[in-house]
Length: 83
Image (tube, rainbow, N blue to C red; front, side, top):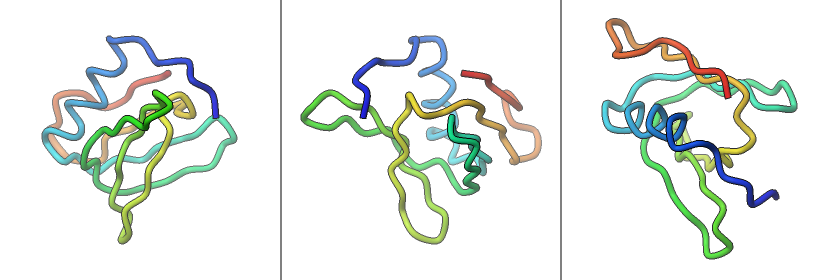
């Protein structure tokens, strides 16, 4: 797990997705895709930041593993962010 943080600008998009509980599709750096509802951001004791996503069960996705975030919720404030 890497400790490098994403930029504040990109972090803001993740926070907005959580604030509105957007349904999202995440593409990770390893090309894995995950769909679910953005719930919250978390920080660990070792300073890693995570997106908590509800896919039927809650998963923590390390923010610096994100490659793309697509918002599936209609009429969202944004539709896609490339990390």
